[in-house]
Image (cartoon, rainbow, N blue to C red; front, side, top):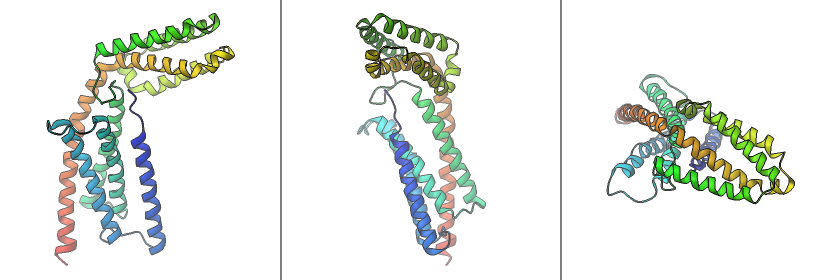
Length: 275
């Protein structure tokens, strides 16, 4: 049920490689590549192609009845990857000149990318299956019961002191969760998770040596229990936030590509056809 960060690391790696290539060209030529030259022009074309893929492929996979190849979660990861690499290539294409329509397009691109990060954050708050399908309240309740049973089964085989420490930790988690509303929990959950980890680190030192050796399995069970209970609390709020985000993000993308298309047509007309 974890979303993972593979697409973010992959995008970072590609963008670092692009930066090295860009700086190599700057060093070799002694100048910033112009947008109309071969290298800068190529960056712009490739970046726009990736952005176009970002805008279309994931939506087609999600909405077209005939398109059912591949899991939705992988398409979303690809959507995020192209949505980070494409705009960065377009940024390098600009020659660091942001006047006129090109500047507006670049500014709007930055807004859309930041909006995408926000959407990803909200998306990860909604529990999903490995296929990317959203879980319902009943599914979460069942998974919570299964996790609780596995946790209690582990504790039943442990020493009394270990059980006491873990029960105190679970009680502390429940008290902390009870102080937060579902809406607030949606936005501060990284801070809450840091608090949980600090509590667990502090309590884990009280466990016996044998229990500490098995703490990795216990940590996984407790983290899963915590994540499921947290997701159940903020399920409705996260869905509402995602619906609102979607209503803003999609029109922004449409405006961006309309202006980008106008910019491309103007660039081709003035830089190519009038020569």
